[in-house]
Structure formats: structure tokens, C-alpha cells
Length: 212
Image (cartoon, rainbow, N blue to C red; front, top):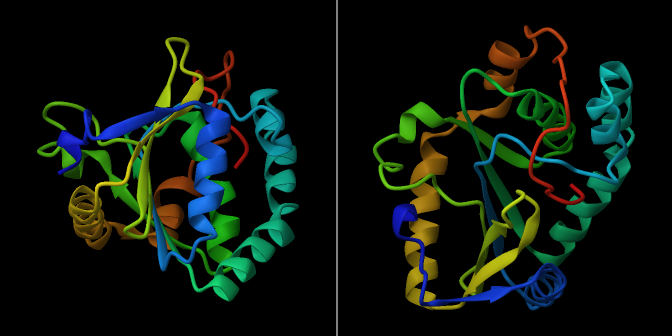
């Protein structure tokens, strides 16, 4: 399943090419988008809420996250008009990292607007991750899937693109199985996130992810 993500069957794309290809495939008439998020530390330079978080201004970070509400609503309306359903599964390790704590507040804004997001405890997939962590993967229907990859410094460097229909179907089936095991976002958020003190950010987290 995810521990055997295709190597030779994929094509490496740099970041601009990945973004362009993603946009082209997304607009081609796909029925759904599945997104699996695994990394626990990222930078999101250019995203005001993350910049405030990285500067240690937690209250401003949360306020700025909420200011994206209309942008997210517009994105979801567009997806609805195009007939594309979105599902996202966020894998979370314990103890929860400052980045993930911040990100879940951002994702809460999206869930408030109807985005379909679940959370999965990393300990529940230890049997799947015997050889490697599950990948950061975005699947566009049965047309294409992308494993987001990073350079030696942890910066987003593009994606491995796969268009093999049988491999995409297999990965979608794996995503479906994990998504079924995931916990409702609000249940996880209210139990594990709301009770946390504001995170202490000591130095910038590693790994540039790009705009959310």
C-alpha cells in the first residue's frame, strides 16, 4: 500500500511544473481529491498566520487564520461547482508539535466551512510504517497522484507524479481504509488541541511547505 509508493512508475516534477500539472488535472473533470498529510514540521513562508506563529504571536496567528475564512469558502464553492469532493486525512504524532498544533487551528476554519477532514493517530498505523512513513500524497480522482518531496534542507522541491491507473486505484483504496479509521476532526480537536497551552516556538520549524 503506502509503504510501496511507486518509484520507477513515477515522474519527478519540480515545484512549478507540479503546480501547473496539478491545476491542469484538477480542472479536467476529476470527481474527487484525496490528501494525506504526514509531516509534523513545516515552514509556510508568505502565509501571514504562520509568520505570526513563527514569531511567537499566538493570538495574532489564530486571528489571521480566521481571516482566511472567505478564501476557503470560495475554494470550497468552486470545488462544489466543479463537482469535486475533497477529503483530507491528517496524521498526528504525540507529543503534538507546535506546527501541528497551529495547523489544526487553521484546518478548523476549513472544517467549519464544510471541508471533510479527519485526524489519525500515527501510533495506529505503526504496522503500515514499518519501512517508511506514509507519504505526503495528493490523489486527483483516478487521473494522477503526487507524492510531495523535499530537498536535503527540508524545503518542498516538487512531487513524484504517477498516472498508472492501477497504482492510483490501489492508493485510493489504501486512503479509503485509513480515512475510515480516522477520527472526526472536532472530536480530536476538542480533546487534544483546545486544552494545550500556546506553543513555545524556539527557532523556525524545518521544511518549507508553501502556501496553505
